[in-house]
Image (tube, rainbow, N blue to C red; front, top):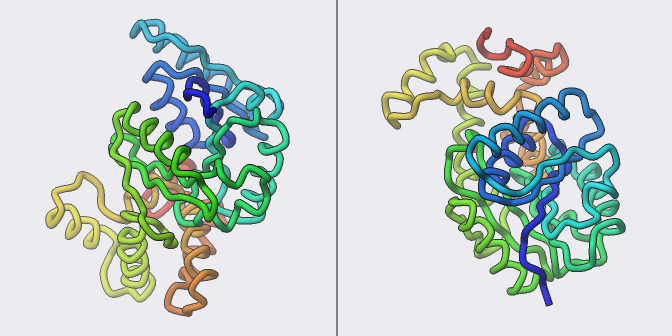
Length: 273
């Protein structure tokens, strides 16, 4: 029997991990956070607890200094570490050893199918892609099976997404980048080519996008918000998968990342903040 999802562990409490945890917490779930870099997380957890109390929401929020403590009573674990396959496999393996047998292990990878990670675990019937989009008020999440994921687990994942008021974007057939992110990859790739080639300023591209779509942010502003290190890692994932030189991210973007110009979180990226 597969237990009802009540406790969710977030492994990797960086920018996106925190946002995912906050979204889930405010829907009455118990949340456990773990990150190898705990700086500022206690303060974040206390802020969430105050917010929950003010809103009359039940379910505790805790931060743990070990992965084993964070997952020991979890029903669902969401891995949200950087977009590096070897790292994700290492984390999945650790979770598999420490989590209860019934627990579902999901990756928030923005491009890598869970089938490429599932070799690291024994519970191959209980793995999923659950890819949350930033900004977090975008009410949709990609959901995709691994090669052996059971229908029961998949339906449980869909119900969980509906319970937290998001629309499950069901991927019927495995693909790199899933649904909207596959479209976003094409947009990013060509915007970066326009920028690197000097064909138009980033401000012009962003203005064009905002006028056409009615969105509040342009592609370069969105990339800054996501984090240029994350953008670079994701684009490299596409490149490694396809082997197509056209998918290789610009060297100029790599140089920005190496200089620590990561966007909003470092107050400098394509724009200054």
